[in-house]
Image 1: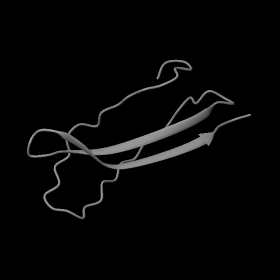
Image 2: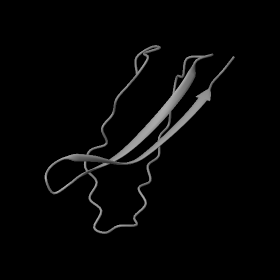
Image 3: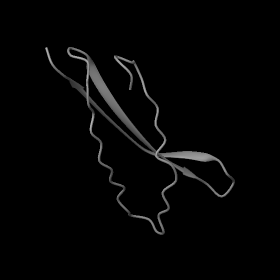
Image 4: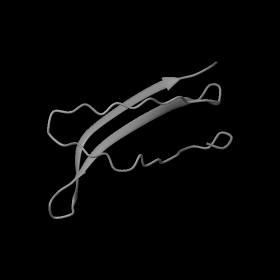
Length: 68
């Protein structure tokens, strides 16, 4: 993100899971967080069904305040 940009949307692309019950894990490092701003991270897991419609399958949000 440039400077103190308010938001960023990033698509990690397609991940193919061959069966149910799998864990999707990813690592992320946030750098140059603007001091005193609350920062939130949202992860949305979706699936494309057999009709080609996107279905939300999971959502996780994390928020944190950095600096003073």
